[in-house]
Image (cartoon, rainbow, N blue to C red; front, top):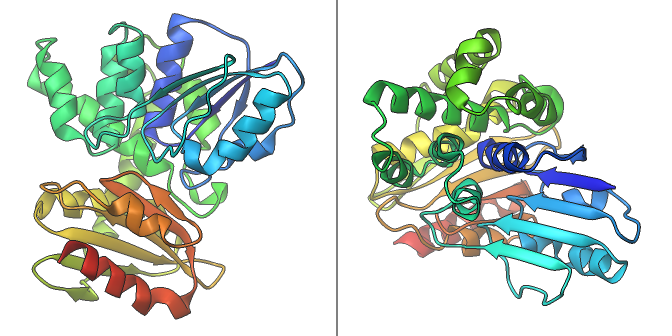
Length: 318
């Protein structure tokens, strides 16, 4: 059996689209909300099973990877988050690059020697890697209007992945993947699946309008902290609102904190665009945290630890 295991954001979805366009494969899809990264725990493999794992931290999933390899699985693993020590095994192919200016879809684009670059550009925009997206686009002589469409699509796909549960999302990530997977170009998806694109766009614009009304809870010249309410729109918008703040204030780090139904906090952290460092280390110092150097998060922070988080956040970037 073959499993395609992928993060439910733009990067994970677009990485898998590229791979399956290049090598069609009947598979079982395993995904979830963006913050659901322990995806390997959702399956029980048999000897000889094949796994493609995209855009989830190897550091967080190393135990399952090692267990599956020992049971005889073959694993292709591509990612750009914290990896730690990569297991050395003949049945593991690991394409890991934690440089802050890359993402899984750009890694896959390189692996496929640039066969579907428009999907990689879309994903890079979704991961707020605008300079990387534009650098790849410049090699293709893409018109500015086309690039703007890819930027919007990447942002909307990424936005759709956020939420505390699948019910918060406009589309489940597997359904959105299936809607896009048949298109060689994301532009064809935009044109032929206009209803889906428009629903994502309208949701994004409405939620961002709500977020724009929120004032910083705490800020100085180095950091800003925003606290959003326990509402579905706030959980959906937390990541893209963080990206928007980072783009507006490239010398400042940002933390967007959302109240959850579990009565704790979910946190999205963005390092300054001009200093893409330490977000992963900061968030990984808390029990449910992790990510990459430029962008990371904490899934569940007890309210009692909020002051500690803000102090550590401030100390990290001051």
